[in-house]
Length: 82
Image (cartoon, rainbow, N blue to C red; front, side):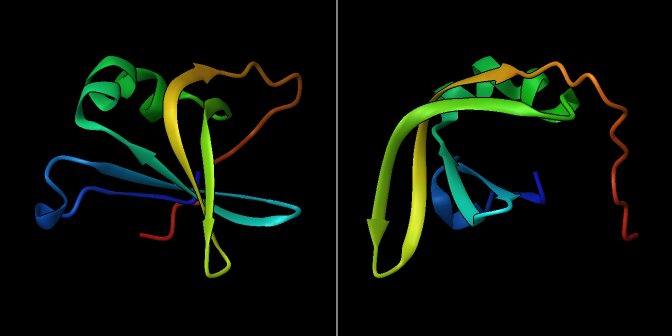
């Protein structure tokens, strides 16, 4: 996950941004989903995300219905730019 946002104007929706070798994707998490999977999303070095993909004007979004920890067999470190 490259970043997480929960704008005041989004009605409690949390947005995650994931990046891989194919590019970026926006993950849209409803308030209920975020409440259920918050700990997994905040503590996992890698995630499996299940949901519905939508592409509008070249912007790809995934409306998540499940987040799951993905166990990595290699060490992963975070890039903290603060």
